[in-house]
Structure formats: structure tokens, C-alpha cells
Length: 439
Image (cartoon, rainbow, N blue to C red; front, side, top):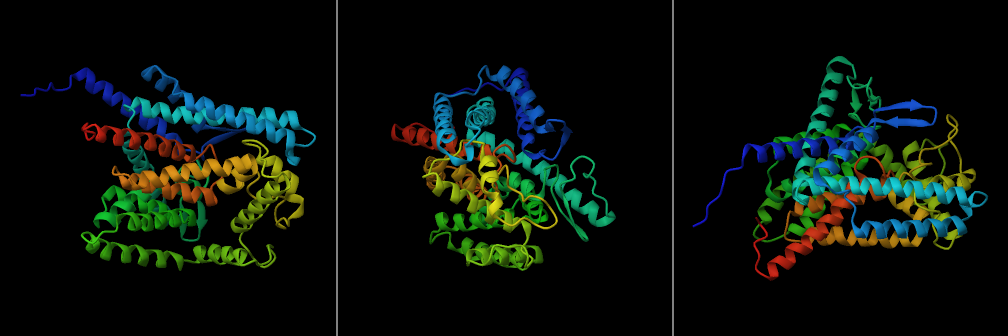
């Protein structure tokens, strides 16, 4: 006979305290649009909140969130940056400063990794608990975005403009950004949650209210990045979930998803970007004189800059965080819009794949392939496949169109894929020796 004791009030308080700290820490993903300009650059509220949250996380867990493999990663990135500073043409004339700045960027990169790992530690080293808290945070900010849109449509007032002016006015409605820098950032931050709910819908033909609100918020962002991410989640779920017994569910859910995708693809703003992208892929002239939108043009230019740097430097990158040096070295060979003196992407390459190509070169490609393999393996595992689908879908999209390391939970995507891979391996070992891993 087994006995169990009810949780004491102290245990309940500790659990509640951990939940609140985790909610606060993960909310930093969604507030990239709140900042104060200073003489040395913008001071972002999210960074201040991360520092405060990290102090609480360290005090509660008694750990810095640092792992042995993280130290190995930092050492490898530092060596790559040193090699890039010595060899890459973009560092010529300032090799020492390029290397030192890159080391500072690596330290910031590692801080983000240990920050999210500390949340994982606080929640009992469970990726499922961490993702559950993230879903709650995403829902709260999705509600905020939906309210922002509803009030704007009803009154013409953007209620968040004074805090974060990132939303785009598109006539009678907004391209919603919530408290993020811009709609694409908002969609990216919400995408793991939205992709999760879409995956669940394709599997069971059921969508919770929270799921519907989250997906609606991504739709209201008018971000093509978000739309494609949701579609990728639906397709990935169909690929891994196909079975004769459950075919009736897929028979209904897949046509619904495809019908929605066709409807979205016919929207004017989506058609504009789609047509420009197809033109670039077909080898059309890379110019803005014929009306190509700035987003597609900047993505194409930054991709070409990265590939030229890769070819000119024999696959050696310039160092983590130093894409701006590569951009400055090559941008003179491209047309600039008549109405501005630059194009987006100097700091981000507008694509994680393009940025990694320029900064880490061939080694960066190998690292990305390894992460993609882990994401695919997680998706094929027996655990929560919808969560694995969500992160594979998000990873696919940020590789194409989101080059920011330090915003929107991009680093959290990599951390979750890595930690899920470890959890899957542990579960597999436990099953082999007959341990109940469902507890």
C-alpha cells in the first residue's frame, strides 16, 4: 500500500514563487520594443529585466546555469572568432578590435544560454514544464496583441504606441507588434506557441481557446514569417503523424489548414513579398527601381553578401556577432533605396543562416546541421511531438528570415532543442531498464 502526503503550504508557496519568476523571466522575449535611446545606443528594458530575473534564478537554484559543454562552446566560438579576425578580409585594418568585440558578443550570447538554462533548472530540469510556462506567457502577450488590434479597428488608436511604436498601420487595421520592435519580431516570439497549437489541431482536430487566440495574434501581425511557420508546423505534423487509424482526422484537418493557407496567400501584402521573392529566386534583376519591397530586397542583398564573404575567405567567418564588418565591406557593390542611406540587416543579415554563414563560415553550417538533426530526432521521438514540431518549425523560419540572436527567444529555440535532445536520450535509457518515465 502506498501513501502520499499532501503538499504543505510552504511547498505550494515555493512552487508558486518559481512559477512567477519563470513567467517574469520568459516575458523578456516579448518586450523588445521597449527601450530608451542613450548616447551609446538603445537601452532595452528586456535586458534590464533579464539581469534582474537572472539574479533571482541564481539565488533560487544555487547555480549559474553553466554547463561543461557550454564552456566548450564558448571556447570553440572564441577560437573561430580569432581565426576570422586573422584571416577574413572584412577584419582588415582592425583585426584586434574585431576580435575583442566578437569576444564581448560571445559573452552576451553565453549569458542568454545560461539565462534560459537557469529557468529550466528552476522548473525541475523539465523541458515540458518550461514549455508549459512559455505557452502561458505567449498567451498573455497574444491577448494583448488581439486587444491592440480590436481597439485600433474600433477607435483608430494604437493603445501601445507610447510604449512600443513597432506596429505598422495598414489602413483600417494594424500589423500588430504588441510590445516587440516590429510585427515580424512579435510573430517570431509567438511562433513556437502558435506552431504547437497548429500541430495539436492537425493531430486531433481540436483547438483550445488559448490556442485560437495565439494563432490569431500571429495572423494579426501580418508577418509572412509567422504564416509560413504555422504552415510548416501543419505539414511537419502531417508527415510524422500519418497513420491509417488516424487518417480520418488528417482527412479533415489538413484541407482546413491548406484552405487557410490559400486564403492568406491571396492577401495583398503577402502576394507582394511572395512575387518579389519568386522573382529573385528566378534570377530577376536585383533592384528596387521596379518596386521590389524593401524586406525582400534587403534579404536578397544580405544573403549575397554572406555568400560572397564565404567564397572570398575560403569558408572562414569573421567571428560571432561581427556581421556588420562583412556588411560594410561589401555593401558598396549594391544599390541603395533612393529614400534612405542604408538597408536593413547590417547587424542581423535578416536571416540566421546568412548571418551564421558570414560569421562562422563552414563550421557554422556544420553546427546548424547538427541542431537541425537534433530537432528532427526530437520530432520523431515518443514524447510531446507537438512541442518538437513547434521548435523545428520556428528554427526553419528563423534560419530563413530572422537574424537576431538576442531578441524574440531565438536562443531559447536552440536551448530547448538541445535540452529536449538530452531529455529524449534520458527517457530512452530509462525505458531500456524498465523505469517509468511518465512520472
